[in-house]
Length: 68
Image 1 (tube, rainbow, N blue to C red):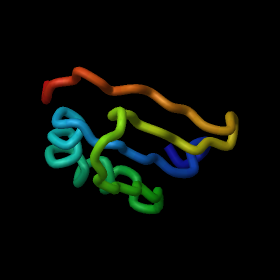
Image 2 (tube, rainbow, N blue to C red; image 1 turned 180 degrees about the horizontal axis):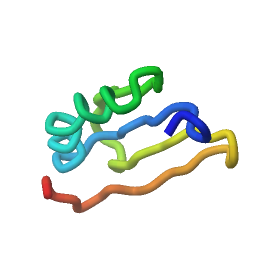
Image 3 (cartoon, rainbow, N blue to C red; image 1 turned 120 degrees about the vertical axis):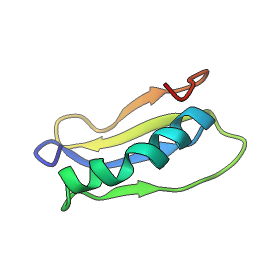
Image 4 (cartoon, one colour; image 1 turned 135 degrees about the vertical axis):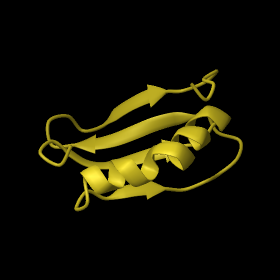
């Protein structure tokens, strides 16, 4: 991840929250120097946002996801 992505931001839904709770440790262990910023808030559209060296930003909406 570190070669092109500068940071990843998660805007939570229940499915994204479950992903973070289950997979954060492995993701961080695989990328120890990579900053993964997690902030919880309410009243927003759930999505994942990444800052990149290649493109100004990458955003992917995550509405309607479950925990699988």
